[in-house]
Image 1: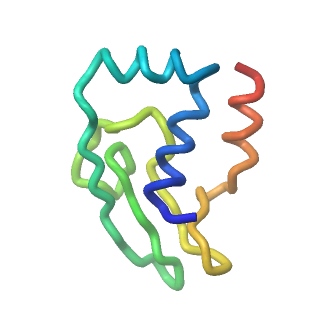
Image 2: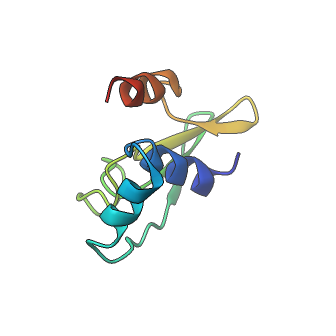
Length: 90
């Protein structure tokens, strides 16, 4: 899965249903999310607003701020489990 889809789906995990997601979307303008690429050692990283290595400190979305290229795909630094388990509790 491509990084933009990962970030979008992680954002949507916060909502119980489509109506909740649409209601939230109506409360604000769409955020501008421009990832920055960097390399740390052998890791290729995409940073998003709110990440310590991103020029803007404030997050654009209340979700992950970093993806790392591992095993030929982008993943959150600690994997997806923490995010998926968190959304299951809500």
